[in-house]
Length: 635
Image 1 (spheres, rainbow, N blue to C red):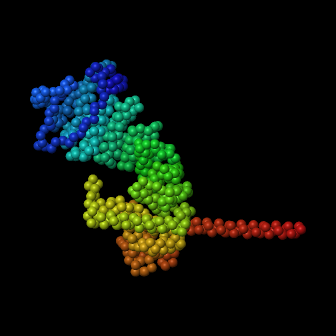
Image 2: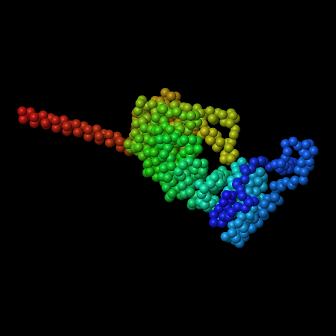
Image 3: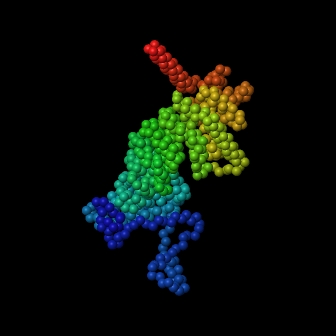
């Protein structure tokens, strides 16, 4: 029908009174007048036949008439009337549909009336203090229940109203927004929302596409108020994730495709259940196929750029699950990231970020990264060779991910891949070790500046929304100043010093002295890192403390200073007090036991190769001599 109001088997021709039924114009949101203020001024409809010149007498007459115009004031009584009217219109429409199943013309009027009553609830956005009244009157179950209406346009109107009611700016003024959101969920909002999404064909018209946008807006607004609860509840609806995956992989580029990728990222970041569900949906493989086309080309506009960023965000969220990390390595995700990072285009930094997430706590992927020549791409970025960045913030973020990747490689690589990582720091006159110490100095100064600003009272803002105290806010400020990158740099240093290569260890000690870096700084940085590790990271904490003790013994000659620094490392550990893990004088030049076999393996291989080469040369010489003797004998 031309009106665009009614569809489906029950559709009927529009009446002359309702020939055009488009969406209402967007309402201008205004804040409610404070109690005690004057009531809103009344206005009179002047009409379209007003002459250009109006006498003063006519103006006065119009103003007098304005006093007689009735203006509805939205209050508790008005809300009750709206809810009762909606309930009556729903019952009327249901009875008319039952009576005239095959005669759409006869229930069209009731449907139009119902549509108008639904849109009246948008006026509540100007009175957020009345949201509680809407909950207490049980109006939300009726409103949400209309999503199941046979006429899809009725459900579309509900989306529009709910997207306006849940606007973040409006919800910020609601006395108890969590209660309003909880009432929506109890009214079965999530399954009904997904059901309507599956019913709408957004390619049919602009109104359908706008309905999808309103639905996604509503989900985003709810996630902004209650992220974990909202995303978990929507993830429990089994058909939502397949719909989002299908939508982000659709051909072409449009606003709803970008929006769907953003909503998918929000759900995956805030819901562990959704990340687990993506395993059976083959989420990693499907999302990788969505970004594979950008390996050699850049997005054509800002909308497409946002889409690509959202897709990378989704993949980064999936890497929180070890199963997805394993799949990422098997489906050649790392190879794709290495190629993207080497192209130095729009996706390069995004690829490095995703690689960082895929390598964390995943030894198998670390081995694959080295085997697929990832070091060849990674270390030029580390050394800032051929890198052009738009801002300092972008440069700091890139350095954070690069150092995190190197730290993962140093921790999890074994055998030949570990030897290749170590060799990278030894080549070209240890230039990469010097770069590490330069970064230590840069980020140490930045963190100290943040500490000084906080202690002097220059920074007083505390994020109340996160409910953090002064100590937590200080930690967040230090992280913004580069604390995490500083920690990764120092962890790389201590791990390199304990890889069993005496030349590398001596060079680290030499550079620490030349650059004026006190070992005590490194000890304090790693101590702080260990203090913030959870209970599940006890093994990593013990590894780092063992490596720090090894660095102290190799770089500090004064025995009293060594003992004082060791006391600062994990002061309460029983193994420290009992002398466990303390190497003797001979152990100072050998790697820790857990690393010794990893170091010796490539050494034995090299020695055996040399022996085999010498043996081959001897056999060749013997064979040549034998041939000469035979030739001489013949002559």
